[in-house]
Length: 503
Ligand code: KIV
Ligand code: ZN
Image (cartoon, rainbow, N blue to C red; front, side, top):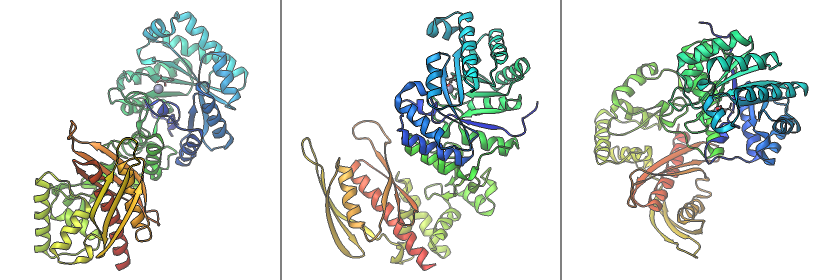
């Protein structure tokens, strides 16, 4: 088996990624994402599907106009109208597709194999006549008849297609099958081949790697694995697996992966699952005592790659599985030193809290530490004294919050779109000038079912210097839990500053 020397990354976050159910981004947001992808080093940006809307065309035009380093491509069916729309969107590179599996031809296209072949040839010839680079995809290739698939790929190659793509449209392929298909297509067309793998069985990255092993030059991927249903092959996972496990070269600046992932997640409104490889919150987080002990001696004991390689930092979590090594590491990070007996007491106390089913945030741990070492310096700066909310139908939600900051009482009242918004605004009003923070992200999840569900709130705040600090709380009352999470985040920000000042 042979690998191409440098693999190419065709990013389709702005096209297949935007087809994630419920996701739409404005033309300006598309442009911002395209610029980030270009900075990241992707080889191709599939900027969209021009025919879907005037806004889509406008976004594509804006992206093309930037003169990015990456090639910019757009999707088109094999119709004259789709290709003309791509042309008037200023595209010079088209990704044209038609389905080739019997199920798609019979139930969706209602066309015979001959008609499909004819349409494919028309599209390639028409786009070539207009001077475009043409990549041809046989939609649902992995469930298509092998002989027909080869026939259509060979025919479009002879008609002038520049590149061939093999879509695994419903994630139905195995790595072995993908490898066979790629070998066949290279043999029958002699063209550069891409693979486009969906993740319905969680095999999108493995299938893309199999494609590379069989000689494919390029893989279609998305940031965070976004895309229809279970998504597409995730750029971050594929690139890092290719680099670290298969020693392949690519043009991606891996240290930007986390930043771009966060950017896309917030622009598209799709949260990344915490345990997602490479970019999930927990990918470089450690709690268990055995692991943190190993990590402290040599991070490679429990990390396959260094977090910095993908723009991340390792973190340790307090909790029932945590041991003295992990807790000491967290306290060290905040410049808090303890003797052996104090450390033991802190570890035991946080285990008692964890055993009661509560998650322990860093500021919980620091409060605990300040209690044990009897140093108020590390204790909470903002304390919630009281708050009241008025809300209902035809009432503007209003919150009154009372805080105690360094033994002084403060009160503020704000209105908002809802009770949480009003309460968080009131806290920010009080904090303004003291902590100077902005909310960057607010997330609410229900942990259990039913109307008495336990809610988990996570808040990310940004301070004046651009540091992002997060805090998480769970509780039964959404407003109370949100207020507590916000105060936690502010306290962590204040503490960080205090420690930086002292060091
Ligand atoms: O998954 C797919 O088949 C596609 C095509 C448009 C290539 O996204
Ligand atoms: Zn797709």
